[in-house]
Amino acid sequence: AGTVTFEDVHFAYVPERPILRGVSFEVPAGKTIAIVGPSGAGKSTISRLLFRFYEPQRGRILIDGQDIAAVQQVSLRSAIGMVPQDTVLFNDTIEYNLRYGRPEATQGEIEEAARLAQIDRFIKSLPEGYQTSVGERGLKLSGGEKQRVAIARTILKGPPVLVLDEATSALDSFTEKEIQDALDRVSEGRTTLVIAHRLSTVVNADEIIVLDKGVIVERGHHRDLLAAD
Ligand code: ADP
Ligand code: ADP
Image 1 (tube, rainbow, N blue to C red):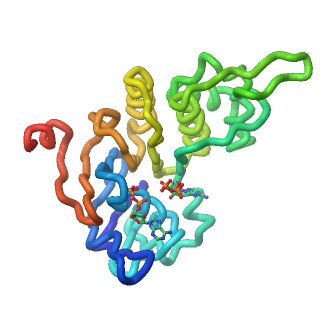
Image 2 (image 1 turned 90 degrees about the vertical axis):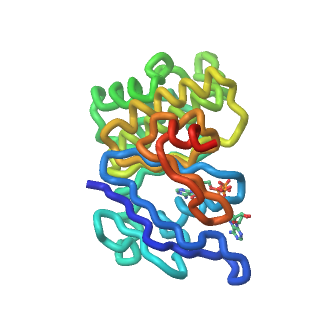
């Protein structure tokens, strides 16, 4: 379950400035689709429409064939797990931060999510800027590590669809590789939509959609897109 379909979606925040102009694509259940394109192309708008922060002026968005216009936002929130660009962590261990997303999660489930997101090395640590009553200091996490904590927290909730808005901040190539690896593991068998800011992190996506000025200008596998250049 979890097929996401955009059918001829048109959207403008203000009438005189169309942002999406007839966008159609499908994320088949269990597959990973990446949306790439220049800043301002309309990529994040796609995820906002999927959460019904806004409604398209034309076209439809479906989950498993059901128009999301008819779905309550609460059910949408449990169907779609959003990994935000920036993650706020609480003053407690990373493990506690994971558990917060789903208090009834078993220890085994937490460890599995941490393993998939490759944060198992430091789940007993505190985030940066915090310290325990006995003075033990928090760990400085890189942007990529924080994003992987967010990934683990989201997958632990077990949503059928995962939406990941990749961090825009400059990442070094090592971090990029780590995110790519974590993404490959968590998206395995899960319906995943990645709003990608770098083509390099989504080489293994089942399809890459190139969006420019609100129109899909190219689509294909990573190798096809490179060949077309
Ligand atoms: P991307 O994610 O590809 O960088 P966005 O979907 O965030 O692009 O934004 C597409 C365009 O919509 C941008 O030009 C942006 O300035 C504009 N935009 C985004 N949010 C709003 C808003 N709330 N009101 C008006 N324009 C907006
Ligand atoms: P930008 O990408 O232009 O920085 P925002 O900071 O508004 O835009 O949002 C970043 C991403 O997080 C967007 O894709 C948006 O859809 C998503 N988002 C924003 N607020 C929420 C929220 N409360 N719940 C889930 N997703 C959100």
